[in-house]
Image (cartoon, rainbow, N blue to C red; front, top):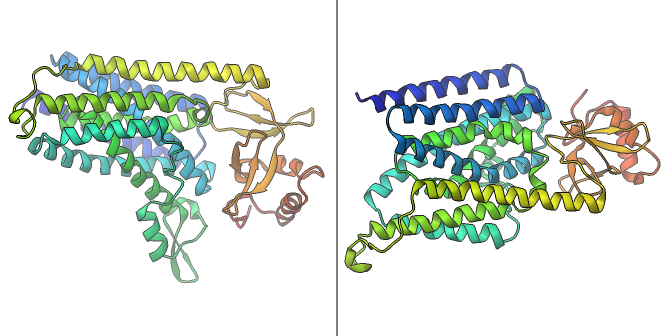
Length: 423
């Protein structure tokens, strides 16, 4: 057994142990992580990735270390799209805030397993059919164009195939049952929203893997490195959700940065296919020698540059909008609502920053009772304290919403998706 094989086994064992430890914490102590806690875990996972790369380099394999860092940053960048979809899915299923860590953790574990299977199949295919790089490259260029100019992405807004099949074939209930996948009601077993949402998260992530895994094959085709890059990117994704959840929708140019990365990687894959060409109808089945060779460090610069430019441009626009509207908050983290001493409603984010916006309570198209601010930002009423909702029941509200709030408060019930969960 070589030193590299020992490293593969040892690193996978350590990663599995860390994932189990993290899962046990989430299961035994469900809570909404503070910004400090979320930041700490992000730092831990980023540090682990850098240690992993450092060990590779110390083993004398600087090439693999460079490929890992580039692939990891590529996967991390492309995973930003996952965060947008996670926000949509958790909102659609009205996941209680204390349950969000658990559903994200288990959903990501499902995603890791599915990605592992996809990686093994992908490596086998490209080893047998190198011309697949032409298809992968063209597909990524198409996805890049769609990302930049194709309008709104509806991923996560509609149920995927597995969720639709379950809805047709099993008994469903709105009761969360303490985060258990099923519950017995009058002698009949029902599937809870907990099971539905973790399946939605895990299987929807696989759709993004169709983009990101072909992209990372442009960096390395070593299945261990590809899988490691995916694990390290996904491991930090859950805490990024809590750290950046309120900021993502305000980084308005981020999708252009992701599009630039995908377009570059797509072109790189096509160039690689041309170099290794064995299709008889292209250059007589011979490799094309004049094609530019893109090094790993070129890819690293493009990935970092694209994300930095997109983020800085978004923050500049954010500042310009703030100067125009007077709203200077960044809304980091998951927001909470409070009634200020001045009688106005404030949204207070995890940093303690407040911004002044009138709040309304209204029904969503799905029947959820939601709180919405003046800029259209919406969240389930379950995310807000009872005191805030009592103060919201004022005469200047819409009469229908006012009656609904008062009725539910009189009944002593929490504001969940159906309003049927006892306090």
